Image (cartoon, rainbow, N blue to C red; front, side, top):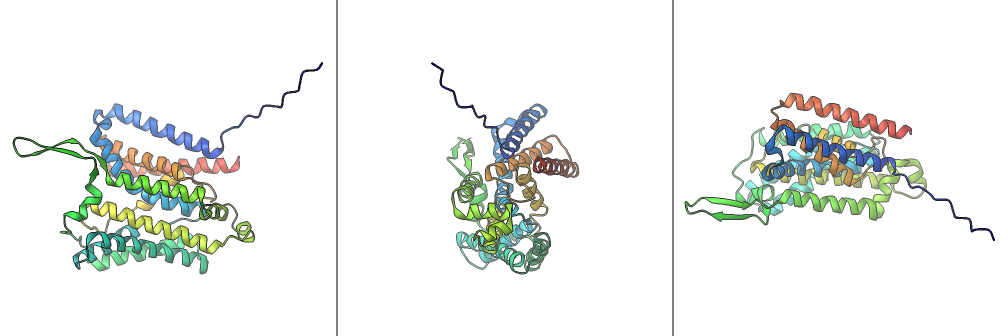
Length: 337
């Protein structure tokens, strides 16, 4: 009697996207290990919270940027939209509007700028690079014109709650009358980043709009022939990017407790870098929120570690530029395989 023939065993190899994400995690772990040796204070709780706060703004921008990049586009205007959203919020608070509605108006301003980007790109058929470059100049110019290039201060204690508050913070009053922080708590920006990241993941992976975003980026013509409303999908992605730039503006300006119309310069490059390092392809059709979060933390840890090591801001720009070029080169190699 012959033995039954066993079916061949199939080995499931990790995809290129998974390998890219794994390499990003390894890179992040190596950076943490290196900087912990160069500076003993790097692994302290306070510095960890500082990294979280710094990464929250980059992460919020990177989530929106990832959606745009997956469609095969790019958004160079997020840094300027961040500043304009903050300016609108500051001016409306000065005009007497409460903080929460004013912040909501700031986010709506960002969404409106993103909507205009999507409209120009999809209806006027202008390339994303040129369209968002134009919006970058318009938004920055508006922010500077509305404020006379001067900061807006004295916005009240409530304005700083989002950027400087924390959940579960424990403070004890000492006999000398000064407060002592027992547990610094979880910063509100970090919680906000987590919530937005989960929501972004859910939309991309579980909802129809996410499938449409990936299909447009993979093959726009095939997506159109299969019934996807390409123009609406692009407008949605750019509107989401603008809205998240507005949210990032609220976090950053709240941390400063002052609205600075010059804030956000070059932030779009950090967002693009975080997305690409995390596995998003500039060719479109590939990317993930989790990968972009890893990329954002790589940028945040790199900047923080270099600052603690006393590296100048100019050298930091050179290093991060090299990292971005390396990530794009790896992406090109992955696309050829």
